[in-house]
Length: 343
Image 1 (spheres, rainbow, N blue to C red):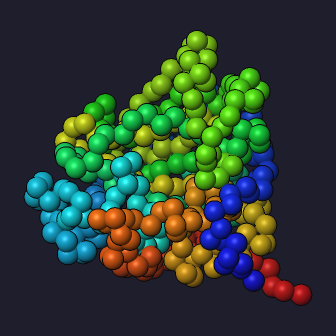
Image 2: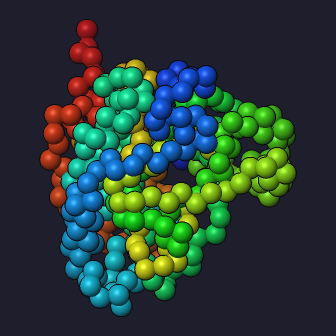
Image 3: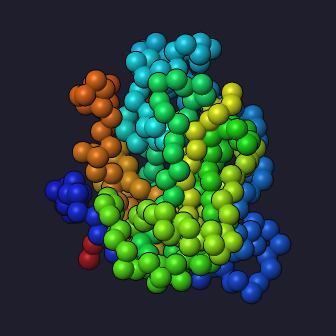
């Protein structure tokens, strides 16, 4: 049974997942795994055809227009809050049923994307996260641009290679476009960094699997030659990064909007039966959770409820407008088929 009260508590210390042994730093793989090993991130080129990406972008536009608030993809004057569902400054959409929209699951279930993670982890038995989408519309005048918010999505007290985050990049992403910024190679110095700064107060975090870097630490990394890199990608590229890699995202400066579906997978073997039961409950109740595929952190709705004019947005019902139509392979990613029958 799933303890719903526990899910909605703001207490956020979660168990540690196993260290992954799928990447050997002494092996040359001849593909994206070398980049991930060396740099802490990788861009896997041409995973989806551009036409397929455009179809998903059309579906996202249709979704935004379906709220009937006035948004029109062809009218830049409608790119404002009163014409749209509430979108976080960083482009995140965690409410409105977005984690379980048909287009979100369509991307997660793409065989070519699953194949990349199957190659990385050496298994077809995978879970996917029920994470957010990112829609950062260009020329938005009613939201301030992001400031750098360097962080890592892994508890510094739990070192080692434990998680690979990712997103499918649906639109071109160049120097002036919204996207990911990473500290190249920062994963390799993660343990030394946290040993050095262990006594520094971490401050508020909604989960222990989140660490915000302070100016003191960023200066320390800079002095050791680590540099920030804007990760550019074409439509159809899959972007991956080690969760120990410091990163943040930036807002669009040019004319291109950002459309991203977060894609994080892990071997089924890294989840407990209790976590698979939780994923089943979350899926059946169209709830989201963070990038950890084991459902370590269900979204705390008090934290992610979109607010409109100081009140919870009345257009948010936590349900997808188009429920997912899953393929057999997509359904396995929910974890439900891996739940063992009770004795």
